Length: 111
Length: 115
Image 1 (cartoon, rainbow over the protein chains, first blue to last red):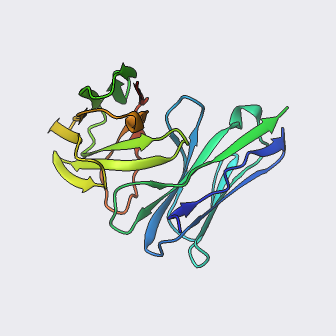
Image 2 (cartoon, rainbow over the protein chains, first blue to last red):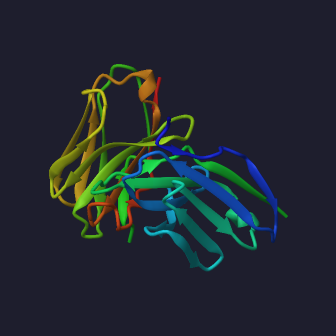
């Protein structure tokens, strides 16, 4: 079982809709959870981090964490064509340093 | 000013050659990382240094040798390059809090092509 799993997509949503991206992780001692966005040919950039159960909102983005279900999600409200990218879920273990990435979900927002 | 920079941006070389990639950060961070992104876009940790000390050394062929001359620099030297080494190599840095409650900032990447 891979440590961090994501549906590779592509996930296609119309402009203005809510995009919902999901991620599961296998290691229960995971402590920190991240969503990175990567445009084609560019480096990953941090969108959201979340460390405790519940929701965390930042502008159009909401991260949700459920440690009991080992599940992290990212909601993007009012999706824009500029949101079209690959979204990488990443996890850091307790007392760890390195990001363990999922394979990413490709999001396409159509005008 | 670029926070995390890498040189070169592109590297094309023949099998069997030895090459180096350099990384520098001006964020004052203590911890630096090398990640490899393969052709399927899977991003995986290779090495990490904290204050010039190696703290992560994943299962990577010993043809790969990282070197950290100081906290702001982390270089990657690759001996006897193979076709499978073709990938994008990303350097990253963070303040280095265990458990990851800090942000890792990525460099622009070095696209290595081995012919």
